[in-house]
Image 1 (cartoon, rainbow, N blue to C red):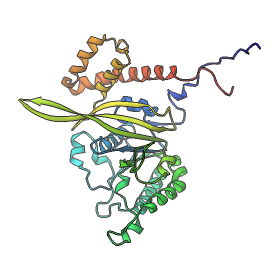
Image 2 (image 1 turned 90 degrees about the vertical axis):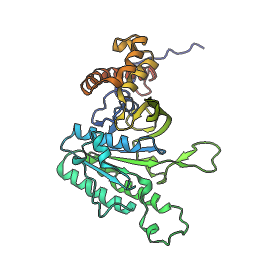
Image 3 (image 1 turned 120 degrees about the vertical axis):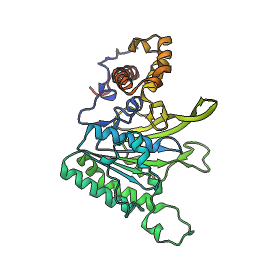
Image 4 (image 1 turned 60 degrees about the horizontal axis):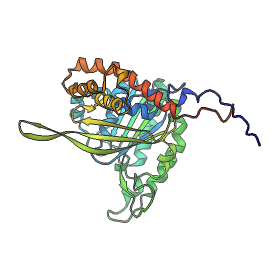
Length: 339
């Protein structure tokens, strides 16, 4: 029997690796992470940033705030610190415009999921009335209790089921409102060991399955290694290499990864991450550098002043995005199921 010829149509739409009509994005502070996310953090959606200690969770969340305010100077930016551990002066030293960020009422901090629901709903109403995009960061979900637990005697057993149910209710009621208000809700979560698991995920985070269902983007961060430097015979860590895994993505291709260095007091080292990635994929010629020249350039990035760094970043960022899109396009199907 003669096999029928398959009709090969045009490649899949560039939507999967390019700009998305109707969607606006905020940069994460690292071009490679933006690419892995499908363009950055999506406005009007819920995103979850998950990681263990010292994986730059808070730093990336505050960088998102800085990039949001740069892109939308009159937009609403809110940061809710539920861990009582945020250092505004450290953030200011990194260049974060803390004076433009709403940190809430210190006298009435968020203690429960119910507090968060009321505060966030109020923020949504404000942004809808102002007709301007907003960014609300909750750092972190794990530090929130619930009213039932708060009223219990300390030491009494609890399985934390109330928090999961409350979050599910919150998202059911507010999911459409989040989209209409053009607010990005960025929730920071801590890693928990999944005790007794012999297969599947070895780690989890609190809050039940509601976040898994309602989040458009979920990124897990892992510290790969410490970065150390020796000055005058004294060795000190100056940063950490981070691996970001996009475990869910409803605005781009899922399961993409990005590696970058987080430098203490600076933030995500975007330029070195970009050059290292171009070397890894063998595309240094796109920035008009041989591999040897790229390695030399990589070593000199730390010596650049602010103006030189900004100029080089502005040149290389669009190249990295183009190369990423070209590579991803190669993995897309060459025919469509529905014509």
